[in-house]
Image (cartoon, rainbow, N blue to C red):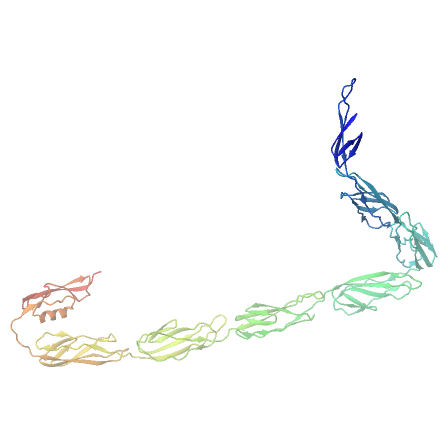
Length: 610
């Protein structure tokens, strides 16, 4: 048989020699001989791995009941180490839990992998001592002879069962104490321990066995807050003095109860006992304390006038609690301060809603009248005026601040506060304020002023010289007042209305006058003089037609006459351009030369065509 090796290994003689880690394959061959054919090769492979070790320190001793703790170990390969436990413990991952007193062995293992062989296990053992325990044994209250058997109530911190022993006039029946006579009894609690706990130190409790007593304490009647202090009484069968304690809306001093509020009061009668008697069972008596009633004192209120200053009101409750106020009508109240908001009446209601100790008081209302406030009008004197002055405004104020109205008598009018003058004379303007819901009407105030007549002037143009024999002609003048101007004549002329007639040669003076009327003073006369010349006869002339369109008929006639023409037929028609009385057309065009005294027909406007 011959061998061949492949991988980190070689054949030395008939032995395999390992040269490194990895996978080694060894093939066995038999070439046969004269009698045997060659055998089929057989190959086997195996892994060549590194070794590893575990480092796991010693574990300290423990006591039963110690908390769980962690252990740690490392493999030289760096692979994770796992743990197993035996004895009085368990392990989960790396956490050890103690299950009893005794000993515990924790084994650290590393199973290897493709590169490492399993490490040799490392075991660590430690002792687990018994746990200490204590007994909790409350004091035992003194007992009355004849009381029922009772459990003393001791417990061990281990949770193990406690046993009892008794000394004195008492015995242990099962786990209960049985009283056999009066005197002093001592009960001792013991716990001997077990596999996991050491024995606990004994604990003894002593108590007295005394006679019992009871308290007689009658029921207490209901009270009302504010009732006077009162006495309570109770007796003990032992004859010992009974004491009292109070809870709720009351206090007690010795046997005197004092009510501190409405609600309820509980009085507890107690007797603490002595060397012979046990404390008596407390007797509790409770009673209701009703709220006290209360009333409000609120006096009548005097009448007021709108505009009076704010004022304070006051009312008191028999409870001494603060009183609040509400207002209805023409007033408001803030706290105790009343404000008048108008004329009429005001009702103030005093209220006290009560509290924990007092019922609400019946509200008390007081009503008072609020008269309208008086007011005055301030209206200053008015200066004199002249007819024709522009409209002007007047001003007046009412002490109430209400708007003032005006009316006028005489030669004037008033619209709102604007006065218009309608003529000369006098004007009386009266300022009034009629009042409203809160103010009485003010006394009217009148102011009168004089209105003088207006001055006027006459506008009267100069009159050119005339030649005796010329036809009558009209004069015209206007007064600034618009009144009609009259004329007077002196000298070589007369005037009728506004038509002047020449009576001879010489000088003619025309005087324009306006005598005034109720509203205008007379205007200063205006006079104009002109010379009336003698007529000079001339040879027969021709008619040179003048332009008379746009002139008044009288002026047109005069212009024609001055050009030795005569006025022919005069017709009338409506015009598109010229006002009534103006010449709108003439039968011969201006500038033509005709025989002397030729007739020129005219058309005069009746007015503008619409």
